[in-house]
Each structure stands twice: as structure tokens, then as C-alpha cells.
Length: 444
Image (cartoon, rainbow, N blue to C red):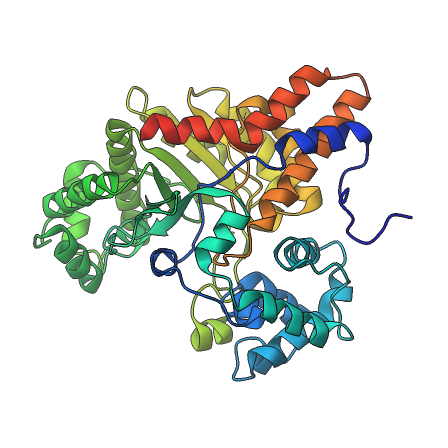
């Protein structure tokens, strides 16, 4: 029997261990996350692992609710010591859950703590972790994980002043115009107009403001755009139709709003193409399904779920209409059943690839399944690898989690004689780091 979370966790063969040894120390490029760029710029410190882990992590909040923890100890007024103890108490119930892996990997890699987290060890671990945190700053943590590049998620109306290079770590904005596509309220348009230095009254004004902000994002190091939505548009408005919808957006029908979304999505994709921006598309998620929690806590509280399967025709229609002006695109579906279909579609359009196993798929089995489907239906060797999609600075253990699973998956192919070692070593290095590094360099 192996020791609890030993150095070979998730690595089931000597070949897998050798592959992992070749990638474990490679730098980290986090090309999609929700970290606070201001905290990086200020180089904030930490004083409590409870706050670090539970201050805004809806993965943990969701798990605690599933295990019957009172909301007081999740988002309520309990102290972070009490919240940490409550989270620790449910760990034995989370065996196999990615949180179980991530939490123990973080304890080991950040704090040198190797005992299992549970209600009995909670106070000892809380004290030991906090002692380590007292002298640690944000950039210390990023350096410990060998982070090279961080792409935060930023609204077009957002402030970009904190983006830059800090102690060798590039912090770049990502253009995320979801509000423009689905909820262009007067209040939001005022903010966007203020950021762009112009009043937004017409569709021309909106497009001009978006173009100006895109240029400002690029000037601040932006190389990636991101869109999150339930499903692809069913139709695409022409300019005149979109202009009419924009003039009376609140009074427009759902069908006309969907067509307006199609117009904006199409227009932005072509603008990304002009600027060499990589376009990420995240879809198949139904958000805020618990009305009472949404009313009391707002969005991102742990109540988003997997949506129905993706309509292939919607994806194909969007990609096909961009022919000649299509940016490079990464596709992410929250519904795992859509991965084979999407992977097959990616082979029909140059520059379109599958993204990482996203969100609910970011599990030991989910990552392995994603890698398998991409290798079988598309091309694993061009995959851009892992990202955190996280709000926590301690979540970079997820890269180690991914690299271990990648190396074990590829190692199994070597063990079976289905792949030679030379090709395997190159593949795991490319997927872990070199592919996304080339993408970032190409755009800088």
C-alpha cells in the first residue's frame, strides 16, 4: 500500500513517473483565470488559510452544502477558523472529488503538510499553515508554483491599470464582453462609454467603443478573448436589424435579442482575427439555478450546473460564417457528452481546437476522458493544456494535478506499446507548456 499522497500520486507506472519528471518543473502559463490583478500588483500578503481557501471558492461552498454544513460556516458570519474547521470536517466524505486532491496537494506543496485533513487534524493544520502564510506574499506564492503568465478575466469597461510585469510574472487582461452580448443595460453602456471616452447611443457608438477598448486591451498585453454563454445563437442579425434591436433592447423579443447576440459575437470574432487574439468559447452552463441563494448571495455562489447537450449545427454555423476572418478558437463545453462531437468539428475548421476539461469535468476521470476524446477524435499533440479558471492564488496545484494525469494517460500508451517514449516525452512537454507558450509568444 502506498503512503498517503506520496510523490507518485496518480502515477501508476515507471514510465508515467519518468514522463512526469520531464514536465513537473516546467513554468506555468495560466491562460484563463479569475485572479485579482490588483492583489498581484500590490503584492498582498496572506494571514489565514481559511480566508485563502474559503473567501470566494464556490467549489468548496458547493461541497460544504452537499455535506450538510450550515450556511453560517460557508458564506455566513462565522470566523475563518470556524469555516476552515467545517471544511476540514467534510474532507473524508470527498474522497475522489477533485477538491480532495487539490486540497491535499496544496497542503503538501505550499505548506509541507502531508497528513490527511479532517476534523481531528483541522486545528493543527490550520495553525501550521497560518504560520507559513505570515511571511508569504502573492508573488511569493506565484513564484513557488513557477507561474510565468497570468491572464485575468476583464470586462471591456474595466480598469487595466494593474496589468503589467511583476517580478518576471506577466499579468495580462483577457477581453470578456459577456455583458455587451447579453445584457447591454444603460448603466453598463455608460460605464463602457466612460472607459472608451465616448457616449454610446447607437450601434455604431457601441462598436466604436468596443474597438477602442480592444486596442487598449492589446496595448496592455491582451492576447486572449473569452465568452461565456448557454448556447450558440440560433440566428445572426444583419447590421440594420442589430441597430434596431439596440435602440430598443429592453422591448425586443427573445428571438431578436438572440440575433443581436449573434451579430455581436460574429463582429467581435472578426475583430479578434484582425488583432491576432485567441478566442475562447465557454458554453453549456445553466447559471444561478437556486433562486433563494442567488437572491441572497448573487452569482458565482456554487449554483451553476451542466446544461443540455450542444447543438452541433449552432457551432458549425458560427465557425463556417467566419471563413477567411476566423480567429484561432478554443472550445469548452460543460457537458462532457459533447466532447466527441466538438472534437470532430474542430477537425473541419483550421485553427479550432478543444480546450481543457472545464469546471465539472476538471476531475481525475474527467481530465483523462477529455485527453482520450481529444486524442481519438482530434489531435492531442496540439492541445494547449491546463488552466486554473480559479479565483484562488493557491489553486496552481491544479497544474500539477493535470500534469500527473496527462503523464499517466500517455504513459499507459507507452506501456502498452501504442506509443514510443521519444514521442511521449515530446507530447507531454508540448501539452504541459510549449504549445500555449508558442500561442502567447506569437501574439505578443
